[in-house]
Image (cartoon, rainbow, N blue to C red; front, side, top):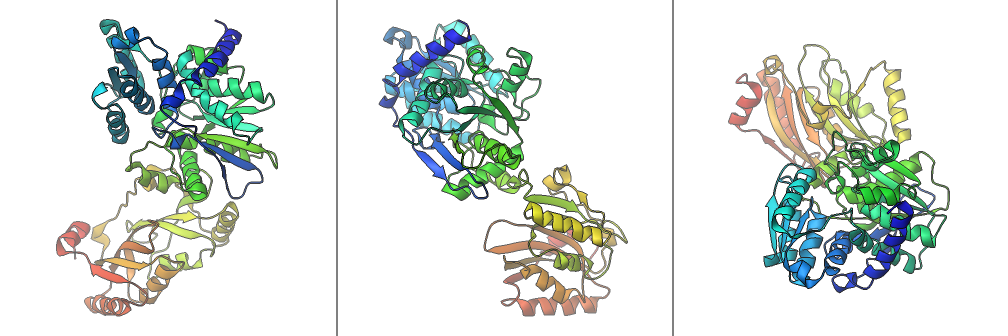
Length: 516
C-alpha cells in the first residue's frame, strides 16, 4: 500500500482497536502543566499512568487480541528495549498464550522485572546483544525456526492502531483542539497513529516529532526520502533508541509530521526536572523528550502566545540509579547551569574571596579543586542561574580580567575528576564538613578560617538536601597554625557549621601520598 492507503487503513485499525484495548487498561488522563516562564498552555497526556507505565500496552494487546486462538497457540515472539515487552507480557497473561521476548542485555533491570511481573509464567525473557537491533534480529530468527507469531513493536498496522487509541482519548477528552502536539519518535508507530487521528479531527494541528540528536532516524529518513540506518545510536533515551524507522511508519508519517525537533540529553534531563516541578511525575528519558522539544521551541520563539500545546508523556519506566545522573544534568540544556574553570592566584583566602564576590543571584552547586601548581590554581565551579544571571557573571569576570573556561560539557567536569599534586601540600589536614544548605553559609565559614588556612583541595556537589557536605583539604605554614585552625573549626560546630570530622589516618595517607 502507498502512504495514502496506509493512512486510511490505519484510521480503520484505530476504530477497531477501541473495541479491544480497554480490556486491559483504562483511558489515561490529560493534565495541564503549570510550566513557568512560558506564555502558552502546556497539556500532558499521561501515558505514564497506564497499566505498564507506558503507552506500549495498547499496540501489543491490540495486535495479539486480533490473532486467532490457533495463531496464538503457536506462541508469540517479540523484541523490545523494555516497554513493548511489558505490553506483550500483559497481553500474553490476559490472553493465556506463551511469549518469548528478546531484550538487549543492557535493558534496565526495572523493565526486566516488570516484564516478569506482568507476564508471570506465560513469558520467557531472552537477553541478547547490546542493542534493540541485535535483539530484534535474533527474535526474527527464532520466529522462522519456531513458527511462532512475531509482534513488531511499531511497524505493524495492528500495533499502530492500538497505539492510536490514546489519540482518540485526546479528542474525546473535550480539552482540545490543540495547536501543537509534540511526540517522541523511536520507530515511528506512535507519531504515525497519533498524527493520523489528530489531523483528521483537527486539520490545523501542527505535529512536531521529537528525536534525540544521536537518535534522529525519522529526520534522517525524511531527508533521505526513505528509511535508512543510522551509523550510531545513543541509548540515553533507551525507549526511542532505534537505528532505523519502519517502512510503514515512515510511509504514514512523512507527510503528516510538520517538523522534527532534535534535543540533547541535557535538554531531556531539564524537561524531566520541569515535569517533576510541575506535576511531581518523573518520566523516563524518552518520556521527557516531548517537553524538551517544547522548551527548546519556546526558547527559540517558535510557539505563539496563548497557544495550546500538547505533549505525550509516553513512559516512566526507568532504573532508579539513573535519577542521579539526570538530576546532575538537569538545567545544563536550558542554560541554567554552567561549569567554569576559573584561574585563581595562589594565596590564603583567594578562592574563598572569589566565591564571596560572585553575583548573589548565582548559586554554587559544585566545586572541584585540587592544587596542581605553585602559583595560579584552576578550580572548576558549577553554577546555577538564569541567562541574565550568567550575563552578570561574565561581566563580573571580565571586569577583573579573569579568563574563565566553560567546561560544562567536558569529561573531567562531568566525571568529577579532581587532579591534585600532594607533594605541594604543606602541613595538610582533610576534614568532612556538614553545613546548612543556604546561600553563603559555607562561604562565610571559610572566610573565618582563611586567615590561617589555604585551600589545597575542595570537593562539594549540591545534593538537594537541607545540609551540604564537602571534603576539604587545608594546608598551613606551621604545625601551630594547623592546631589553632582545628580549634577554631571545632568551636564553630553547632553555630556556623553542623559538624566537622577529620578524615581517618588511612584516608589521609591516600589523599596525601603519605606526605602529612
